Length: 82
Length: 99
Picture 1 (cartoon, rainbow over the protein chains, first blue to last red):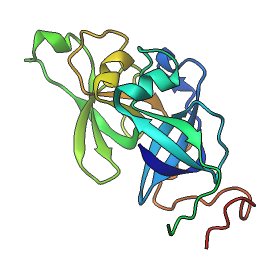
Picture 2: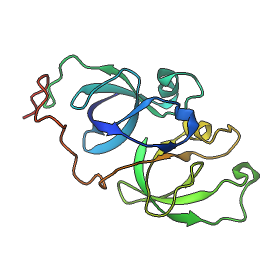
Picture 3: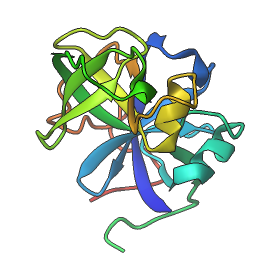
């Protein structure tokens, strides 16, 4: 699992129905940016834990949920230069 | 899920049956590499989209039988090319005082 920082929400009105109504967040993993399904309700600036592969689908709702990266936890406090 | 920009449509008449009649789009990802993705939402050239990769890409097409490993998940409403990582709206969130 990766530690990422929430940049901002990703708004995509025209998207596949499989995502239902879940929020999407733009997250920064080191230097590259990615998009993750928000299963815990994080806000911009939070440091979170993201999970990938098949676990991302179950974390986002059900086994057929089309996600390959899901936020599964908000870290209480994290020092970026750790 | 990655963010990339649609370059255009890829026409591929001779294909395996598993791709059925899915429209194929040519995308340029954040590192500039050209990749091909199936498109269930009808994106056009120049649109910024986010893609779903791996076996979740097959689910994103709504039909597990389609042989794809990268699918367009949706068209992003507003995206500034992502060159500069936008700072959080408020100056510095109280919890994390990033240097």
